[in-house]
Amino acid sequence: MTHVVQTDVLISEGILTPEQGTIIARRSRQVMVSLVINAVLCLGIIAAAIGFVFWLADALAVSIVGGMFLAVGTAVLLKAADVYRMFGNAAALIGAGMLAFGGMFELVDKLGEETGGLTLMVTGLAAFTFAALTFQRAVPHARFLTGSLTVMAGAVHLCGVYIWGDAVGLIGLPVALVHGYVAATLIALGMLVDVRLITALAIVPFAQMLETGTFYWHAMYAFYSPETTLSILQMGLAMAVCVALASRLADRTRRHTHMFGIMAFIVANLCFLVGSLWGDVVGEHLWGPGRSWTYDGNYDDWRTAQDAFEASTLVIHEHVYSIVWAVLLVIAAFWSAQTGRRGIFNAAMTFAGIHAYTQAFETFYDEPLAYVIGGLAAVPLAWGLWRLNDRFEQRSVLQPA
Image: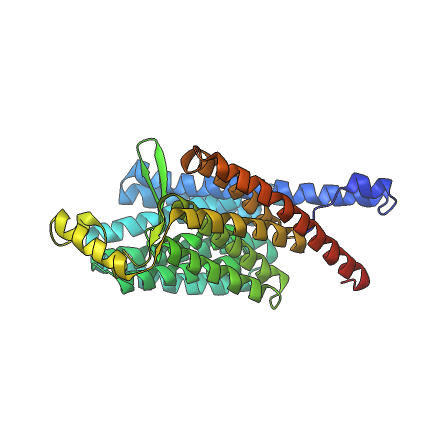
């Protein structure tokens, strides 16, 4: 487990030598700088490849320019010194990306979305299988290139899945299954190439299984969760599975379960935010009358059906959400602090601030008694957490790990 330590304090207490403190600081800095460099490189490659495809907007031109980039990158990797290997990787991947994504757009344009999407599914899966086998057998200095090609092939396959699904008009349960398949594939792909960003992206289709997601409107980003309670249970189950698997997996794989668990925790908190503002009519959009603009009838008929459904299902008030969310945030922050899960701890503290700010100005701004009750309740709660922490500390001293 990765720990947060104050090396200066440990050196002053004689636990670490100055040389050991310098080594820890240098390695920590190297990890952070490496993450930044890799992020900049990958984003640059993706932006350049897709930008060239749309800028040239011609199949022949994209093929020629992409082939040139691929040839130059290959030559650099074969002939140039190691210091220039990054340029070779970048050029080769920009060329490969242009050929892959340019070919994908051209194929869909010529064959249509249904046939083109199905073709992309099959060819992308075949290319992904071949690239994955090559990646696993690649020499160390070729793993970045082969791993990136594996990711591209996987992206083509998944794009084909969505294009085909949209073309054939999938609705209901099949849509949820498609999102689940894409999420599972992204998790497997992230673990294969050991890129946690890909694993983190899997939360998007996973949340979309219950239509939880985001949208953009002019100068506004919005998060929506039509089935708040069910989405929270879905994310809670995902977190429980990640925690249960963490102790049984190797460190390399465990990092990915931690990442997906953190993303599930973040989405669950966003769902709690929605619930604390609007409450939830459980099942309204899955087996209830749905949204008024999609109802097969006029608004009065929908309102009647909506009232009848609310009378027969579980309705959770927004104040219940506010209280439960606050309690769970305290528990999550304390548990994550005890177990050294910095991602969960940072997210819990961030959402605690968001929760406090939102409720102060949205729900309880004109109810001073709520502040009195909440403030007085926080004092014994803090005392109880302090005593519980002391008990944990004594137990850890008596039974060191």
